[in-house]
Image (cartoon, rainbow, N blue to C red; front, side, top):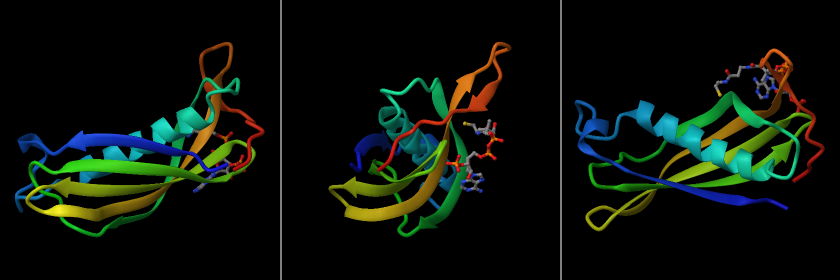
Length: 130
Ligand SMILES: CC(C)(COP(=O)(O)OP(=O)(O)OC[C@H]1O[C@@H](n2cnc3c(N)ncnc32)[C@H](O)[C@@H]1OP(=O)(O)O)[C@@H](O)C(=O)NCCC(=O)NCCS
């Protein structure tokens, strides 16, 4: 079953670029964190130590995001492989002044990992399906 996970951030003055809108690099970090939370919840019952980001695909900045907006990310597991988990993140920007908009989307692939005896991360077969 597809799982939905939620993650939110408030756009504060240090997040603003010279154009007066949210700097895209912060949005990328928040998308990655949102997907990390979703992958962690998806893998919760497995023996994986955790999961690491392997690829960010189809990132689209659709609408500008402003100071004081809440960025609310909704993440869905849309695919699984042997070690990978693919997550679609939809980031909505929301404020009284600007309303609610679908601001940014991305497909992010995580790989389930365990630590070997030297503490090095290696991929882990999670045996899960969506
Ligand atoms: C995670 C890691 C240990 C796995 O290494 P590996 O065992 O050699 O395996 P690969 O990375 O080649 O592939 C692992 C999975 O990713 C998938 N994958 C590889 N390249 C991909 C890409 N460009 N897009 C989407 N999926 C990809 C593979 O198909 C495989 O999935 P599957 O097992 O479900 O079929 C290694 O890739 C790594 O350390 N990467 C860096 C991670 C990192 O530092 N992330 C940033 C901080 S979290």
